[in-house]
Length: 197
Length: 197
Image 1 (spheres, rainbow over the protein chains, first blue to last red):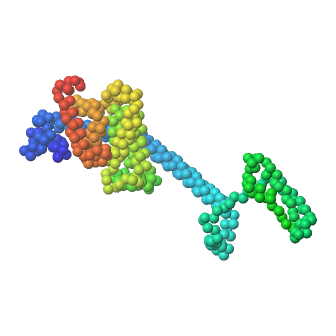
Image 2 (image 1 turned 180 degrees about the horizontal axis):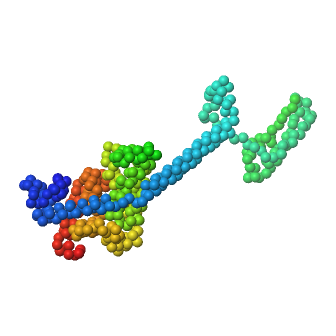
Image 3 (image 1 turned 135 degrees about the horizontal axis):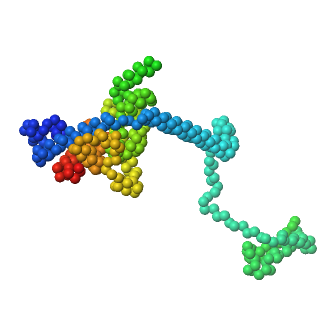
């Protein structure tokens, strides 16, 4: 509708409008003077078109723009090639590093990978061990090896001679100094007699 | 040599869309013809928007055609060339305005600058009183409204084409065009004319 109104402004004065055209124009304007003023603007705006025709393009502009475009294109190509070189180098370096790390980690990689050489070890069920097995701590004695004195038996009633074993020295030590030992156990050791054939 | 002239003659007879197809294949001659055909109009468009600052207008004209070269492959040949071209120009202007928005110096200069700084050669084109008023009032219009007014009345683009070029809805374009007409009409009242003269 606005385009039709513009078209009327260009073509006709207010007095030349028929009834339908006036109805259309009245939707945009208050009176005939406003219509004519708008029409004058429309006609004067032709001046802008005249100004445009007289406005020349910047001299040598096309060649300048073209050379800027060429330079820009070359620069982009150079950047693209550089980026591509860098990216290819990165991929190659990463691949080499991966292979190297594989070789270091698995030196017999080739043998292991051979299906003939490769032996698959099946898991073995250890049936002898039960979960409620108690592992007893074994005491360790930090002391000199006890001396053994062999006494020749004078009693013929004995079938063999008696061996007297010197008591462990630590037995005579105060109890609190006997670390890592069991006093009762050591006492039993002191009473130990060994019979030789 | 003769072939070159023949080619030039053929190109000059080609329409904008045919030339754009050649520009997309980086044809320098086609670009030169397209530039010579449109650069003046684009320059005028920028002159209007930048208050007849010739240096800026020339730079922006070159930038516009550089964009044309860069985006030539994206041009759809089923549409008119001029709205596409003015869309590029208008986007450059908008981006530039956005960039300058926070520049206080620019804002101060824009406020203090005289409305029209046209050189004498350009002033000769402004001839009649009412036409001069249109020109002067255009410079006082908001840049968005001014752009739309120029595209409509100077470049003779249709409302849908202006909508595409500026990215505004058609309704907004129509209301802005009407607003511009109304404002200029008010300024053209006899009392206001005396103020101008």
